Amino acid sequence: MTAVPDIEFRGVTKRYGSVTAVSSIDLAVPPSAFVALLGPSGCGKTTCLRMIGGFEQPSEGKVFIRGQDMAGTPPYRRPVNMVFQQYALFPHLDVEDNVAYGLRQARPRLSSREISSRAGEALEMVRLAGYGRRKIHELSGGQQQRVALARALVNKPAVLLLDEPLAALDKKLRTDMQIELQNLQREIGITFVLVTHDQEEALSMSDFVCVMNGGRIVQLGQPSEIYDEPADLFVADFVGKTNLLSGTVAGHTGDLVEVTLADGTVIAARKRTALQQGEAVSVSLRPESFSLGAPESGRFKGIVRNRIFLGSTAEYAIEVQGIGTLLAKADHLIGHGNLFKPGEPVAIGFASGTPLAFPDTKNNGTNQRVDKHVEIIS
Image (cartoon, rainbow, N blue to C red; front, side, top):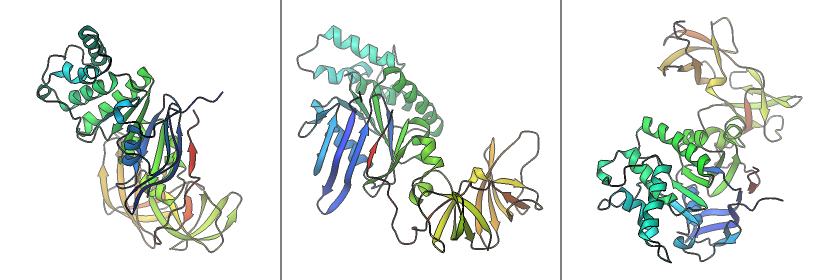
């Protein structure tokens, strides 16, 4: 028997006057999933989060939480809680009173002993046991974020909504909190829905990524699928770094398509949709798919123009005549002195079938879409 989704959108559209923020979305999220809604500003991801939380109502369609239609149900009556980007903590209350605030509003009223006990359990859950009497201004940014999480979890919601909760943290703390959130979600076993425009955050934290653009779901899948097998040119370009090379379909070899690039080079690429001979395409090549070597070898020959040393890896901007500038990424082996220098000639290789070809839609403002009905299979 199929489990009832924790969250379900059925034909959901949201309009603000003449502007359509979300268009005809169907989405089913199973219990205990960690889902990231990812997309550029204005894509509709925050509007979807607000409709789950009850802060907005759909113009069309229905939102269900654990099988219950949420039409007209206010936020405080829904089995969800939200952690906001700015945390929205009360500076005049100590940590325990911040966490317990929602419990004190519960009806029927809870006893003071139960409120204190549940607040303490929530603080232990986020590893802040013993911090109950601290003032908010006495906490670090990461500790304040944990207080916001404890306050959201203390009412034992079915779904936790996270509205870019790590945006205010520095890089190291943000990385630490990504791991903390993953561990916390696995420990308590409830569904987390994260809204973010940070691709690295979405890919590293979630079980499933829902990529949105123009108010629609473009692709939904596991992080590796989104990165390795993007549904269209928008996803390939938006998620992670990639090189987009213009070309024309020259023919087909088995499941691969032969593409003639601007310099006349013919490469074999994978494809997500049918492509016709003579059709203009864009070919996506991830920086890490390249191998760099001596000028005598490789598919392309170029000159290193810039190098960014990242410790374990190095990124290179390599100018290739007739192609343009390619971004390549290579591992740095300590003690091997294998870094190429700016101005140095280099050959670029890649395996046949590594490139991924899409219809060239970047110049006409359109993007392919996958089926609008998407369901996460647990």
